[in-house]
Length: 119
Image (cartoon, rainbow, N blue to C red; front, side):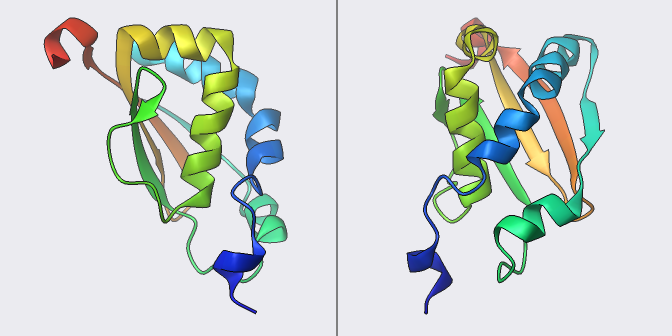
């Protein structure tokens, strides 16, 4: 069975919802500089044991990805979760953000230039 066909794009949504308060806090704090938070690898591996890599880079602005995340269900689900959060949505209307999950399961949150400067 092909893992891409057996997994739904919402496999990580419950995990991201668990971390929603922390991620929103990191977004707010990112105004003072890049933030990071260590996640637990076993939580990702339990959801998708056959997945070889979980790392991704998601750049988001106004509720949409500004880079290609089609191959990363984890990034797609993170964006979905962010769009269900009022505070996260408000922040993404004002600023672009980069969310990077590295190979050590550290989530990096960086606020990009204000929206006016991105246009």
